[in-house]
Length: 104
Image 1 (spheres, one colour):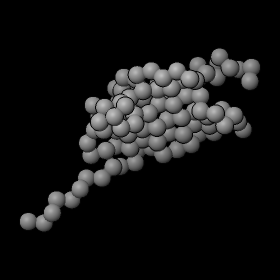
Image 2 (image 1 turned 135 degrees about the vertical axis):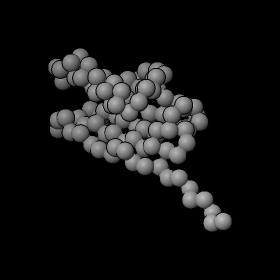
Image 3 (image 1 turned 90 degrees about the vertical axis):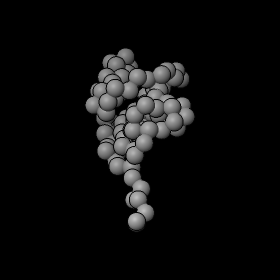
């Protein structure tokens, strides 16, 4: 019997969205063959919003730490529902940040 082929991670999203000369978002989402330690789903993600070369919002799920988000210096758990909801929540936080910092 031939050896079983290993399942591979599939890139779902790998994009950069430019908002202005000083701000952009990077979205990287992979579908994995198995869940990472600390997660109950098969996605690995890193979504970051950068303003003036500083990451002000980040959603990620590093291995062992599970799903969480950073807003400024605060880190909080994040409840992952699905990829569409993840992106929508990230975009909502970007809009909120922009509204609260419209003077910059």
